[in-house]
Amino acid sequence: MSDISHNDVVSATVDILKSAETVLPEDVVNSLKAAKQKESSSVAKAQLEAILKNIEIAGKSGIPMCQDTGILIFFVEIGREVRLDFDLEDAIIEGVRQATESIPLRPNAVHPLTRNNKGDNVGDGIPDIKYDFIEGDRIKITVAPKGAGSENMSALKMFNPTETEQIKRFILETVLNAGGKPCPPIVVGVGIGGSFDKAARLAKSALLEDMDKMDEFEKDILGDINSLGIGPMGLGGDTTALAVHVKKAFCHTASLPVAVNIQCWANRHASAVLGGDE
Amino acid sequence: MEYHLTTPLKKEDILKFNTGDVVYISGTIFTARDEAHARILELTEKGEELPFDLEGSVIYHCGPLMQKREEKWEVVAAGPTTSARMSKMTPLLLEKHNVLALIGKGGMTNVSEALEDSCVYLAFTGGCAALAAENIKNVPTVHWLDLGMPEAVWELTVENFGPLIVGIDTKCNDLFSEIEERAGKVLSDLRI
Image 1 (cartoon, each protein chain N blue to C red):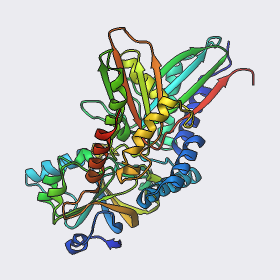
Image 2 (image 1 turned 180 degrees about the vertical axis):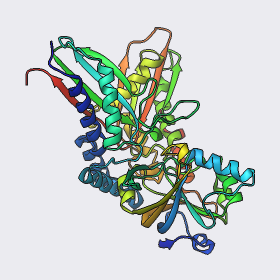
Image 3 (image 1 turned 45 degrees about the horizontal axis):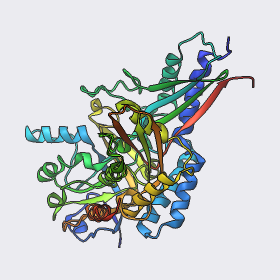
Image 4 (image 1 turned 60 degrees about the vertical axis):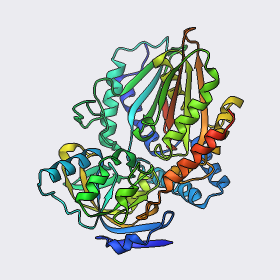
């Protein structure tokens, strides 16, 4: 039996939510600082300065960096040796309810049609929790709060298998259509292959990748995106995107799904590891 | 140019703005996003009075994060939301009410004619909710809380709220669409 308790998961959930909402990962902050250094446009520089000042205030005061504290998306990795005597999902949901009160978080979850808001960020299918099984005796819980401004600018297309050459243009068109709306500089997550839903999930999980680790294909797309000149907040400039990350999966021989998930500059995520020897 | 204005605004104040100018606003601003816009239009159409005065007002596209402490609402975080969602409802809003400035982020679609000689669109840096909250000094009242915290109309007292960039002026200049147009041209010229 593992000694992870229901309460451990509840408090870890509250902790990582507090951390994700108030402190941006170091690689994201560094990437924004580097962008500010490189910007040639003064309006763009001022936007990046405001963003960096905002991050500083949020971190110091322990308040959310953006009022859109997002819809809450969890990635949970469960070691195959872990045995739990409680409902993991219940514990995460309880953590979300507590964090909504204590941090606080904006109640964002509504019924899709009546738009009724229960006020606790919990509803059918929300928080969204994805489980994966890994080796070992630990559980790793990652939360990535996702704001709607950038999520709404995302796109998915089912290409014909022979249309691989069109993928890059599709990514660039998605960024162009988004313009200043998703709060650039953005991070672009791309999922290629899998199925209709798998491609989207790949694109979303690509947003969690280390900002600086990009292969040639990703750097090439990033260069083209930044040549568009949309700039921070769509007011023009050199930095439209900070990073591009692509994840691939095998797909049906007759299909080629491509998903582009747009993330605002506030590429928020935080993790906690429970169990193990320590 | 840089301007510091106090509400209620006067028309002559905003007519001199050009896209790219920097503006700071002090006084009262009202938050309104999707649902509030829909309700304003619905009540206006029925000829009913609104519970707040939009004459010479500033509307802030924002769904703030608020907290009630000792029966008093306080701002936690209150950055701008994506203004484009309000694009379709804005021309009718401006036709019926003398709103002189809209604050938001990301620009708006096909509103520059509706804004001509009547209203300006000001951009606040998106996501900068902690920064915005620093310049919001008081929350006198809230209207239509039944719409939920993000969608309600919050009356906010602000001091030097900004920097705001003039995105669309009263002379049909639209900084966002100019940049998007240029970006579209770059993309069509890219050999990919």
